[in-house]
Image (cartoon, rainbow over all chains, first blue to last red; front, side, top):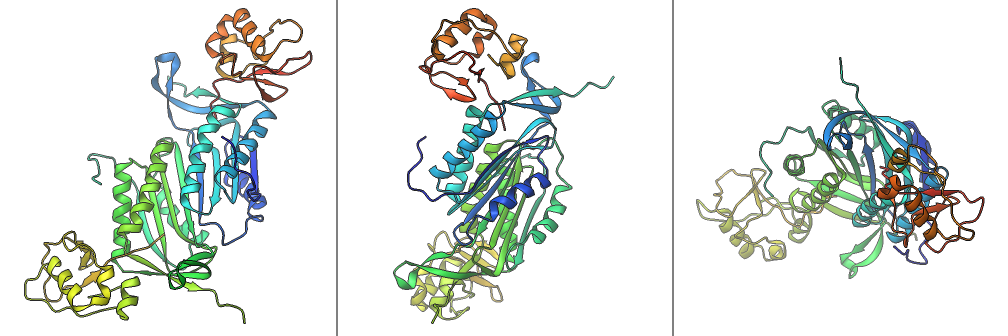
Length: 156
Length: 156
Length: 80
Length: 80
């Protein structure tokens, strides 16, 4: 995954945020990013949300689906943030993005809440979609973040 | 593109909006949609923005890039809205989405403003990305919307 | 017949008149359009697959066109 | 050496001690880890490609590990 050379600089923001990713956390982050993006160049902007699903397979029960209360994300700090940013920079250069923002949760994120927000903008749709797909694939390999299921307590 | 049968119903919203798609237009539309989505099922939500780019190739000048002031979208009403909704329903069924919203502009949209917003949510990322890609490909074939370039006036 | 986009630009009008016999199908209307409006030939869909909307819905080649129907040439769309 | 996630669960600890000779490389540390902590074998990366972080950065198999370095086993991550 080598980045092409001589690409224009692209605003990059990568943050680890405690708990679920709320609208406020994102708005604050985007304010920094948007001021750097020149209008009229980008033809496509995509925002991806990864959300905690209720049903996870439980390895302790032969992979059977079991209702989840939350996921607990553990991050290896500060390497996690640095790898997140490093990944964002590589993806931005490879796909000639105009801006990229990645936010990831740390700690407890209840079912239905957002643990990952990725925002990319680029000249055309194809680049933006390819960047999105590749970012998430690499995230799951290269960024030191682990998740632990917190199972819903069976009602007595 | 046949839809699988016996899929659960999915909230679908398809609207044509006059002028650029603003945050307010979208918020109003999403309010309707979100109330119907059951939390905990969706693992991925994607929001796509199509934005008017400054540089368009001008067929009147052998395809040379020429700075644009705006695009003027003409829609064949009410067929355009109906085909937009029909497309949203087909895509939702094929990719087992949990919700889909498509907004498209009518009339003048200046450079840097948004003319298309597509929001999809589904169980997993792969379905949501495939739905996004397919929706936009089909939109450009099946929905009676035409665009006319309004070129920037050269400064005297 | 209604025209839009590049087709309307070439016809220099947002509607054109096409004369067909009684009981004509979409396929026959498209053939007549090609004969009677040569400027629009570039924009014509395949007469067999048909890309006319009759009363605001896409119609196949076999679809009959009746007096009073709203017929539109839907071609070269470009939303998004 | 720091452990996380499933590796920490299997080691029943968030750090384990691995004894290596002076001037050992990442590759040698991984081999020693496999010997000295059998419960962690499932989680071990390929000793040649290496998947240890030394001082908070991924380190290749040849990378030397020095006294005082912070060494972490980065495996089976699962963000997103």
